[in-house]
Image 1 (cartoon, rainbow, N blue to C red):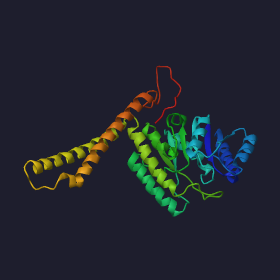
Image 2 (tube, rainbow, N blue to C red; image 1 turned 90 degrees about the vertical axis):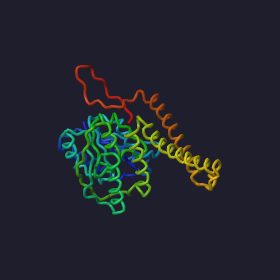
Image 3 (cartoon, helix red, strand yellow; image 1 turned 90 degrees about the horizontal axis):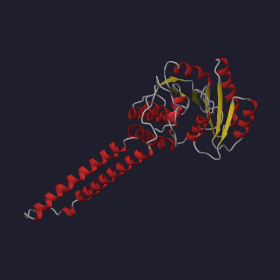
Image 4 (tube, one colour; image 1 turned 60 degrees about the horizontal axis):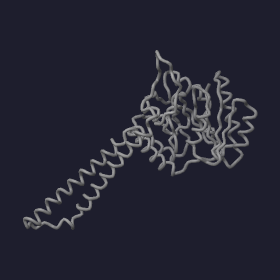
Length: 325
């Protein structure tokens, strides 16, 4: 069964039409599905519409938050409630075309674990398209997973991915990256992107700043999540070494000035003294933080696997457990 998770924030005008399009596509292609609407603190009649749809259709489920918690939280709640072997994410504003569902399913059956949508012909203003292209380039460079459109709301993945990838904040756009770091096979497929018909965009300029900060978080989680000292310790050693070299040079100057009466400027008047002391302290703090982070990982991460098992043979299998990335 295909579980389709749709986060909702003030989208009452589009929900009924979205259900009709999804039902038409899935029924026409013999796809058994459930549709999970997650109301993320809507202030319009979205929840009332969801209740009506759930009462009219057995395959529709609704979840309502007490307030707005963000898209990642809505998607997490929907994925936790999903019963299908496959999970699909899509937006509620009808810009994601449900007619693409069979194409994503067919691509997944080629042996992939995650299929990410690619709005190849994007119908958005330039001030959203250009920063998005820059962002996608940065994600590819920093994570090694080069996709054209990490921000696309259309994502399809297997239940194993759902059980192993934990998202929070605004990390939902990085599900392919997080899955890729666990060894899952990730690909993308061009999808039809439609103009917004109802409502308005939920994203502003702050989205790009948050996206960059989230990218740094993902880079740390995927590269150093279980070995934080490798990054913090390396930076600490660099600054500590530079500080020690600076102080050593100033020590030589002090000896030459005070013991051999050479006419050097006193070290107390040199900016290098302040920089060297600051670098030494910063390096020591970074190394200390790395050691503390290692202790946290060692004692709180003991029940979290640092690997991902695809299959087993010759022994009883265990159910998938929630694993933090």
